[in-house]
Image (tube, rainbow, N blue to C red; front, side, top):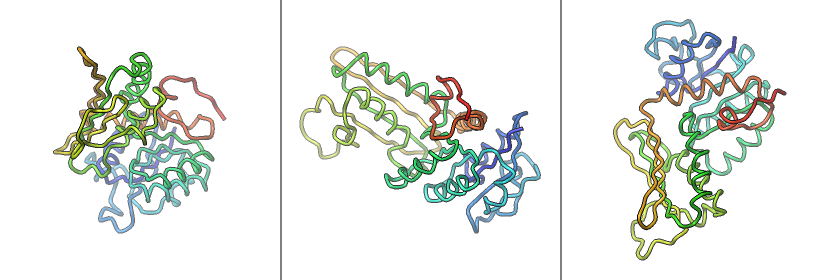
Length: 271
């Protein structure tokens, strides 16, 4: 039985994960963590998730439940995620990180800490998105520099980071494949920009509104045709399923930072 702790358990993803883990026959939820002073501290995680009492109280003390856990699934905020990750490192447990919005310094710290333990981290836990990432490398390699490339992402109005971590990963996949530097060729919106579009430019555009779980489109356009690669998440269950699959995989992974593509496309290596 794989023993799971969820951080950010009262958030939309946390509640979705609670519902998903309870349905697994090989997993058990042993801890539910939320930031200090949250009004749901002390409540049952199942009640907060809308599935009734499951006997797992929400607490703000990760250390209290880590010793009885195998894997932490982390969906919170960057600053909180760094603190949780350090605690996981201190106890040599495994972690799945779905949090996005890290700045460059925070991301460097995450990578350094994650290298010491078993960790899966991805800007998007959807299995479909991670297949899309792999496909984009193939498409960009085949089409080369003859096509203009644009990345368009749409999310709900509560999305904190912009552009999304997924959009950046999609753009990075294309630029790395084509030997470009995203810092040099990436452009975020075009207000005030006059003139012909540079051939190697990568446009990245963010749309926010309503309750859209997440849409990502990558356009490859040239004279006479357009190729669109599209992924649409209809609900957060897609992210939860990916995170649960990652948690199942990471318990037997080698130590170090892994991404979802390894789960999908590469054989497992044990430590």
